[in-house]
Image 1 (cartoon, rainbow, N blue to C red):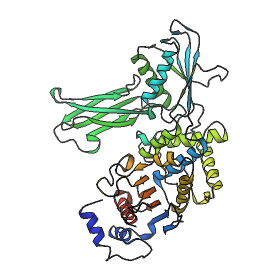
Image 2: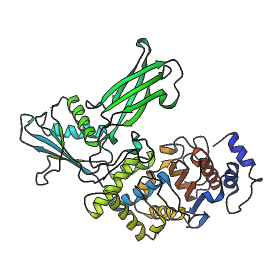
Image 3: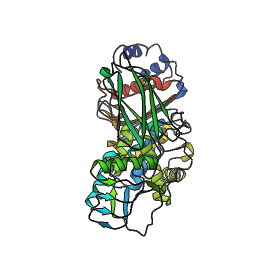
Image 4: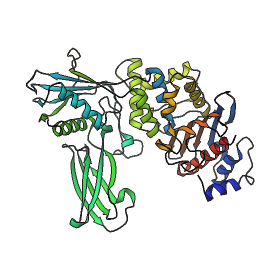
Length: 469
């Protein structure tokens, strides 16, 4: 934060110099926004010496929002190792002759969190290299490695089409998300709608009209109406002519339907022939896979989870931990058990911590700043410290911190994970001061409307104070 607002906060330091345990810039930021001291938890520890520089309400359990992902990713890294890879198995249930598979093709997933369109295309290229150009049978999909139970994507905030609410799935493809591109065609008074990826089994009803105006407003005036199984999306409303191209990400279809649509689209796009249907099944493990497609290594996956705060990927990690450590099938309950056991073995009181789903998209998650600081200390002393640190956002440079601290001395000084929900603002990670000293920093704020800006102001005041120490 720079400019007049920062100067106002600094000038208020003398006026609001109360609560001597807090740095004066932090205290002034709280008082300026009318945020009570007891809504804030801070834990700061010098990395080299282990000295606690600042501890404020550090034993108070608070909602960490997406900072919870730091716990899930560290447990996964420490338990599974940075080179761990998920597998996706492909079986040919019939003979292959002259490029034709006379039978069904089966795909079994084991929870790959990053089977995006490009990766799925690579999997299908391996099928083509195995000699298959035409499939006479159907596509059999096996996602039995995870048990999701009854999942309601709208339960958290009544936004079931939002990408952050996607359910985990053992055969998750492209996060079950479609990116829609809207472009005004003023010559013909219409709005063009394109999809990425293109799915033949997703119907689009375009009822959009063009209105004169600047490219602004919620969803640029677009209303989205899905049918019951999200196999048809209706777009209506008035789209501003001032928009060049507007993009919107939303979920579509069920998991299996989405994978089928993506498979058919990519297979036919590459010149393959397939006119079959899809069926959900549990594969016969006695049938050897024709090929096994491996995921990106875990070290790369946790970087995508932490830097971009990807909720469904974090949840995939939690289910994977449950399946790997306690045996299939993977469940959220098993994943939490693994996390709690890991924390207990490292002297972190699990009674002061509640991991809901591994992603932080929850009102029930709780952690103390001190315990999170202990966890970060463990991570720093771990052999996998470089992989863990590099998974966090760099201040002013990438991830969720890319737009913060760009034009200040704090640029590039912090490796941190941010967290934000309604009434929650949090940040945690590692920070290097002007002196070269490195610190573990945890800040958790739970208060009405704290996510609307005041939380980030408090965080910046703390880091600026620490930078000059």
